[in-house]
Image 1 (cartoon, one colour):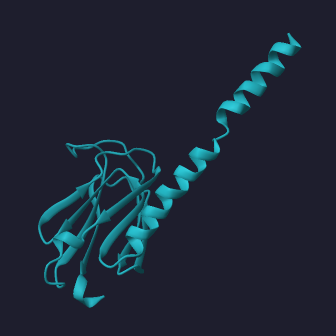
Image 2 (cartoon, one colour):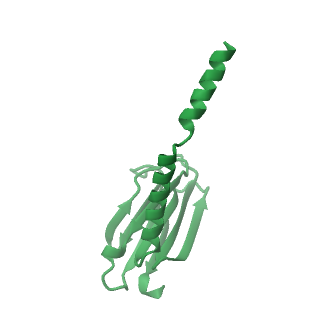
Image 3 (cartoon, one colour):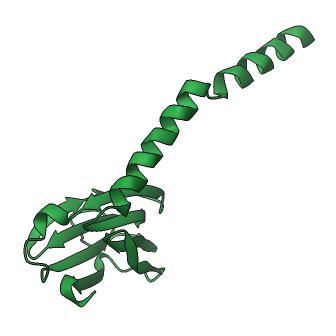
Length: 148
C-alpha cells in the first residue's frame, strides 16, 4: 500500500510539473502580450471583474466580459487603437453587479480593477469595489483620450 501511495505521489508531481517546452511557450505568450501593450496605441487592461464589465468607444460597445462571479482575477487586454480615429474620442468603462435582468436580487459585492494604457504607459489605474448590495450599473468612468 505504501509503495502504491509513493508511486501515485511521484506520478502526480510529474504530471503537474510543466515541461521545458510548456515553460518556453508560456514565456512567449507573456512576451507577445507585453509587446502588444508596450506598443503605441490605446488599451484597457482589466484584471478583476465582479460581475460584468463593458467598454465603449464613443457609443460603440467594444468589449463585454459577460457575467463573472466571485471577483476572479482575469486578464483582458482590450486594444482600442483601431476604434480611435481622431484622438479625442471618449472611452467609457461600465461595471454591472448582479445578473441580467437587473431586478432585485441578493448580490452584495461588486468590483472592477483595470489600467488605461496609452502608448505603453499606464495613465490611470482603477480599483473600485463595494459591498452595498447595489444591482445594475454600479460604476462608470469616462475618459476623453486627448486629455491624457
